[in-house]
Image (cartoon, rainbow, N blue to C red; front, side, top):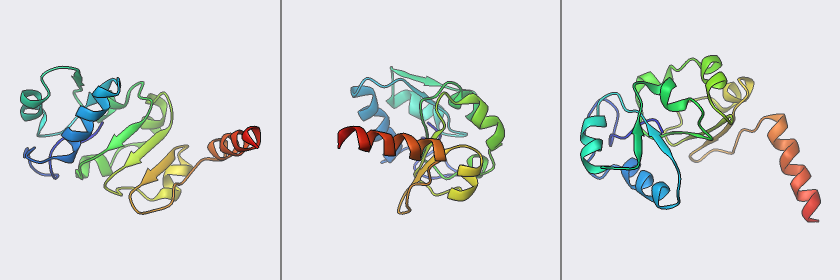
Length: 137
């Protein structure tokens, strides 16, 4: 998970949707590895257990089933997508801040979900989805 602060450029976590999402995912049994350039110390006070904190965005992404981008930091918008693709377990990005162009994400092998826009899926993901639909029919 990338981003814990209410907004980029600050360590303000008051009313941060990221923290609510972390708490809900923990209740569902998810393992969370989070990174925020400024808000981790404050988040540690609120999220006392169950969350692993990473030293940087790439460490947070390593082995991830999905990468959630929840705060708009310039650092997150400038990630090396080739490197990122090699680190994640599954190439799924949920972008709550619309930091990336969906076509660029697909070009780099990611299935990309962003707020208010259609999903951008790799051919492999699209083929799997169609196969599942045929199985159900």
